[in-house]
Length: 93
View 1 (cartoon, rainbow, N blue to C red):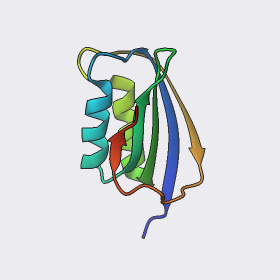
View 2: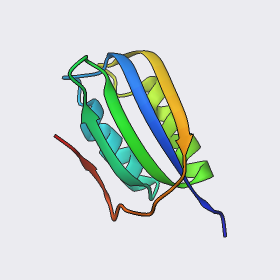
View 3: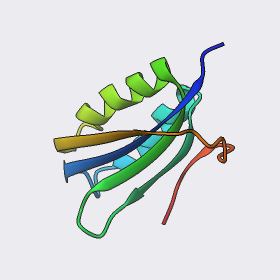
């Protein structure tokens, strides 16, 4: 069985007010990932996701595109140690 990994992702560009968070939840859930997504005060979207490496790669690939109205300028990602603390994937406020 593949080990569980964790990615901490920050996306900048036109990524707020374009359904980026809602679509991130849908994509992450469809990939079997756990974690959360939230808007930051500086206009970026922050994502913490845990799951199998291939699913995380697919989420990261999606993050570079985002939903149709988004204009992604930069995606920064850090790999962290998985904690297994999340039971689902949701929006944080």
